[in-house]
Image 1 (cartoon, rainbow, N blue to C red):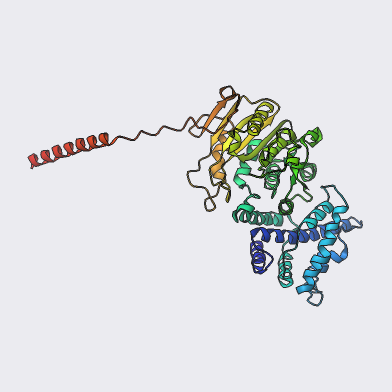
Image 2: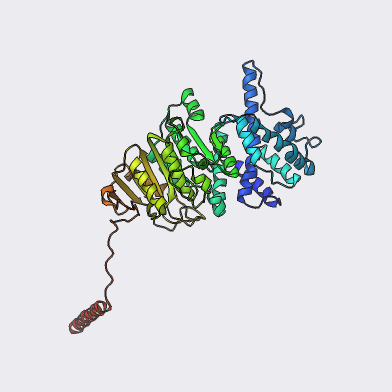
Length: 484
């Protein structure tokens, strides 16, 4: 039922002149879903307060309650067409009153743990792109059928929402920056193994896939009690995201996965000087896939000890600085970070190897990221001691990767298992730091264990073998004639 509802909303958005792509579809669906969720949440809290004999003070003013502007209903529970706005009236209300009112929450608090913060950030940065009030009316009616009360309903909605994020990633280059294949994320989490009472951070949160999957991982393994649930909800997952659309998608994704008020800050992570990061700002586990190929302005580069315009290299410095002593990280990054010879790349490798134990490098095949033509590696490291030995694993699923053949959990199974013991194999090998060039710190992926292919035979050898076989055939035929 829910799947059909999402499809119906997409069909309506496709007809609207204001929504042009999968990115628009999920952005518009997200703000509508957020308000629907917010209404259900406030109603649940009001019901709970009433049962306890207390009053509940709504966050949203009555005029802007879902039941008043989006879905006013008659006594039989059907949409009251005499009251409900539609057409131009509905669009003018949403653009001229609803969004400005909700954006005003930004001035009320700067605490990311509050719903007021989320409301203000989302609606001060997002626009309603649905141009037709009749289309918007139809979308609101579909959204009204989506339930948010039970964990079972949220779980189903989260899977459907993840599918939409995946589709957005497949839509092309711009969408791909928000989507990391979930099997890769799950493998990264399995290796870093976050535990209860540890903090998990992603400074390039995107659609919050890392944080959502880490939540699922920890929730499945924890003892189910009120204290642990509250810890997961409020004190475990943290993120930062610069892009408006990604921020909204990430918030909605975490809500659907069960985190009521996600600790996601809408900010440019790289705008913060790493020299200002203190112990209270550090985390036990960092999981991330920072943007590839971005270029930061000189004033942003001043926030870092190693100056470079490459966004991913600045993020690496941020992550190293943001790890607690003994903290663990798994970072997806383009493979050129291992071999570039410019001063910044060499300095970054030196920093990583001297301040952290870079214990594993996972080499991913081309096509892992739909729409992105870059080869990537995943770096697994622990802060506190210098690197002595690195285990490499070269993933080879035995097929060409791409939209129709995406990465799956089975592909990652061998890596997760072998990573525990780090053996030598046709796909894996160990590299001692003492054996690398100490001036370049080149960590290029060079598999020494690939079986040697038999050398190609020369034309002379092939001709000689053919003549030999011809002779044997002639002798055999003569023997048969003599017997006859």
